[in-house]
Image 1 (cartoon, one colour):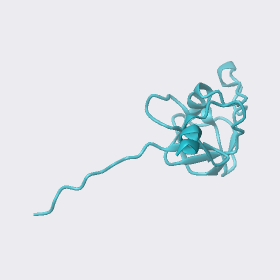
Image 2 (cartoon, rainbow, N blue to C red; image 1 turned 60 degrees about the horizontal axis):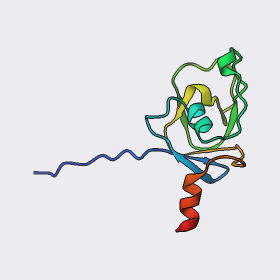
Image 3 (tube, rainbow, N blue to C red; image 1 turned 90 degrees about the vertical axis):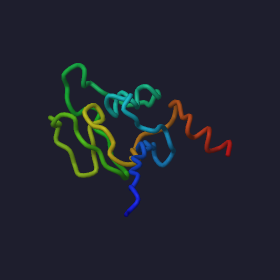
Length: 109
């Protein structure tokens, strides 16, 4: 008799240029709302009907889209307004001014 296999799904870590920002959980509706909650400086016009303003370069990782993006994207870009990370995700965004609690924990260790 084989023992049951436990499956553990780790929440993806979202990083800004290699610096850990947050664990992405189901409490976040989209990547954009998670970034905004941590005060990341990201320009968006999504709520005004202009698609593509929040386009962000992905340094590593992957996302899945909740709705089909209306803007044209390169292979290394995402639209945070309509996607969620499916694995650890490193974005080409500045951490300046952002609330970086995971970074504080890292430096305390």
